[in-house]
Length: 406
Image (tube, rainbow, N blue to C red; front, side, top):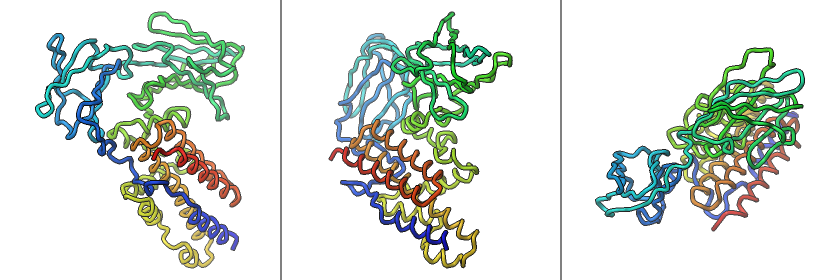
């Protein structure tokens, strides 16, 4: 009877806690098309960046984008890029030369713009770790190669065995343990060293500016100096799922182009990291993908209940007839629905960001909090602890709603 009472409590609590979007009725899920309601006149926001890319709005979208350098006559046929609704963004490092350019549009006429010239592009930048080791004196040494980037662009992170927090070294922030880290260069090869360092087991070098763009980071295990160097693993292999910190993984996924989102490590839900059977967890999230396409939270939650297999908890509980295995499965379904409802809030928040009602930073912060809430729910041992997790998630949602632009 104890397990039945717990199930009733948590399920009723879930249904009575209000987690509904303010002003606008909750929105839809799945990311939407983005930009389809754009009211900008065509090309009014045409811009060329120092990363060598262009962006503009045009309705309807062009089949091909053709650009000409009006200074030297160079023509860029079928410019590579992607459309997000009516907004086009080209690949980086295409318009590398400073000067005057134009787009000849049959409908809207000649659109002129100026490019500043290439300064830095994630598309060209590359960083590769060659080794990371530690010796008996407590010194960490590492070697890496880099091109088309500067040390100032990089973020260095060490993970420590058994610890969640990472040691970080970057231009604007340095962990106390890394304050005296030294970096020296010999051509395109760099070495770093840290004396009197704590025990570490992994080093990651990333380019923060490139989160969600071309996976410009590299990771390697740190081994004893007496051992052969470990093999480097590139970000292109690991995708967004390889970043050491949850904030970076979330921000990377939020900034992905549509065609990248279904790549396994990009799809891999944060919560699944805590599951013993990770494939089962991923299968659950894949099973509910169609629910995010529905237009309201009410419809999506009804869809989620059906996908989880939880339609009427009271009758399903009665059908178990006290069988412990049946009740355990029912409890798992109830808990899955709770966490999927938190995920539904992430989807709603993403829509708010696409509509310009919250910032990208607010969205990232909220999604991280929801992911951490799901992990905390999984780790909770009692109904009181689970209740506290849900109440805290509700507070996060209310706080976000207070910032929504009307």
